[in-house]
Image (cartoon, rainbow over all chains, first blue to last red):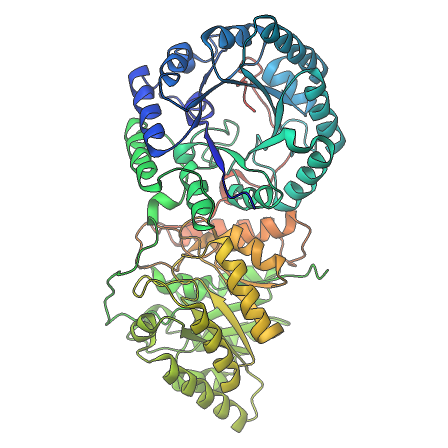
Length: 314
Length: 314
């Protein structure tokens, strides 16, 4: 069994775009350096979108440039259109993620295009990349694959057809994203099994949100089906602008904790990651953070109890 | 496949014993009534332990008497010794749970007995029950089965031997409890598989804590192995006096949400349960509560978005 798992950090993009605090570039670089030192080797550092829409991410080019100085680090960026992709290719990002919505309603709200128009965009991005001889990897993230706050149910047949369409249009790999935190483990098993039958090992990644507490349970199922790459956000920030107070992305530290305890190798040092989490929490004072393991810490023996206080508890 | 699952409420015992607030008997009865109306059919209403140690639970006899007036409700109590068991049998509790620690250090701290002495206690309780012709079910909860804050690792062989010993001593069923929230899904699979091989269907229940965010993932594994009864606490209270701020028991509402979405039948109405959770949160103002689904609520279509604010997010 392949026990090597990549946990891709998306906190700098999916996380920071969802909160009010604008983190200065110098602190983002500190974050990237600390994540790298902790062992993270794939980081989505930002996105190339209009700065007037997401001013928090206006420094993405500088972050790609910095990330590229760290040996072995895959610098990934999100791009919603050809223009963004051209910038990513120009600055030499190792990987671009194109968000495509399986929900038509979400597609209209999120990228102002129909899914079919996004397929044309993917093809144009692929052509532009190939035309300049760039090696930037093209990945498509299938948003709202498990349901949509706007549209409600998203037909599984649509998800499969769009995955296939994205690959036909020139994407090199695809991922399934539970954008709004609707997925349950049964649904994750059904959809991943079906998608793996349809597109095989080009389905490389799962993107879960912990909105309803199921991120780790869903991760477990995708892992069982052979998925070995997971998006996650340190401190669980991001991911759910439409449900105030709800948890956001799967917390990197929780995913790493679970995987490590189960014997998987993420290459990430949990103590270092928890130290970074603590630093991020200071930078983001006042923001809603998520995650669980940071509270209780990693299990260790030798706790002290007051022997006069039995709890008689199983 | 058996899709019927019992979620046993332990909030009134495991939850309330762990917090500072002492809930008046009248409110506990309201809780029991609302849980029953929501569809819960097994509730651990308290424990028979010295009132000077756990004054919060001193009204257990009255709660058993009330619970017995609700048709079809299994009134369960925790008893750590023969004296407590005699009281439970006397008041006609339907089920007693005897906590036995697989960790010797926890056993000493929690019940002031060695595991071997607890086996003798179980035998004495069985003899006392049979002597009076009572039908009270005798269950043993194997505490610290997945590790212990005091002792550290707990040998799996000890857990299996004590499960077998408990059944040999007269318990009718046994459960595995992750008392301190150390269990990971891999460990849950290993230990439950081994325990099921050893004692078969007399292993009837799993008791998980969400201390490190893994309660639902662990539940998923036990479910996969055929376990159809889970302890949980509404609002996730209880369970972890040694890790301040950490989550407690698996939250009943989260377990019910996950199971329901996966197509299992718990008989519990989630809306009614969430209303009760809200009520409990008011009663327990200032206490640390847990759980996830209460924040974002059950998935529903028709959210409104500001179309001027695309997030370009997968």
